[in-house]
Length: 184
Length: 188
Image (cartoon, rainbow over all chains, first blue to last red; front, side, top):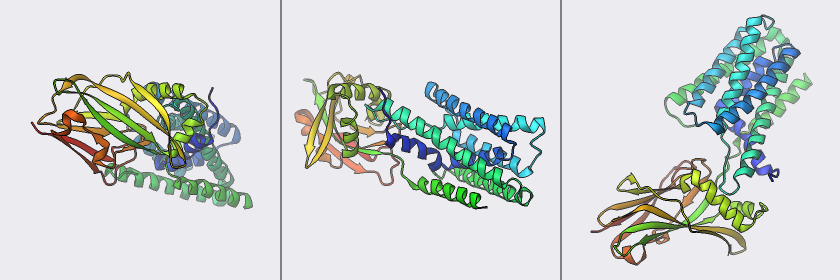
C-alpha cells in the first residue's frame, strides 16, 4: 500500500522549478497557451497534461539516451519565438502548431523527470515524487497561462512579446552554457 | 491590475522555492576484504549506516525490518549495489549477495539502520602486486557513501601485512558521484 508522503511530493513538485530547462519551457509554453481563446487553451492544456504522463511512462519503460536538456531548450526557444511573432491564433495551422508544441513539451518534460529512488522505499518515493512533479508542472504552466491571458490585450500585447523575447534569450543563454559544458 | 500583481507575487514565491536543494542522503560505510585459503580475494563485505533522516523514513515506513531488508536488496540490484570494484582500473564482475541483514542500531539518542551484505566476486582474484579500488555511485544522484578514514577498510588477516588502504576525499563531487577515492595497494 502506497501512502502519501509530503517529503517526496515536495521533492517532485520542486523538480521542474529547480531545473532551468524545465522552468524556461514551462514559462514559454504558459505564455503561448494564454494567448488563445479559452476553448483552445483548455484543449491544449489537456493535451499537455496527457503528454506529461506519456513522457513519464516512456521514461520509466525505456532507457532513452537523448540529450533531453538540449531538446527542452530548443523547444522553449521555438515556442517563445512563436509568441514573439504574435501570429493570429485563429488560423488553423497556428492552432496545430500550438497543439504540437503542447504535446512535444509535455512528452519531453515527462521524459526528463526521473524520480528520486531510495532502495527499500522505492514505490513510496517513486509515485509520490511523480505525483508532485506532475502537480508542479501543471500548476506552473497554468499560472503562466493565466498571467499571459490577462496581459494578452494590455498595450496590444507588447508586454507579452517582450516577455517571450526574454524567455528566448534565457533559453539561448542556457543553451550556450550547455554547449560549453557548464553544469547547471 | 491587482489580479496580475497577485499572480506575479505567487510566481515569485514559486521561483523563490527553487533554491530548495535536491534530496540527498549520506551513508557511512565500512568495507571488509574476504580471502580464501589460496590468499585470493573472494568477496568484499559492506556495512552501511544510513543517516538519521533516511533511517527514520525507513523505520516509519510501516514495513517490518525483514521486508525492508528484502526491499532494499531488491532495489539495489538495479542500482548495482551503488558499488563498483575495480582491479587496476578495470571493473570486476560481482555476483548477487546472498547474505545480508538490516539491523537497527543506536548512536547517542539517534535510531539508525545498518545494512550489512557480502558482495562476492564472480571469480577469486590475486590482488598481490596490484591495486583494488572501491567506487560508490548512485545513478539516482541521491546517496553519497563515505568511508572518511582508511581504518574503515578492514583488510583482514590475509591482506593486513600485504596491503595498504587509502581513502582520499574528492573535492567538489556531484551528489550521486563517488565522494571519495578508495584504493587498496598490495605488495607482491
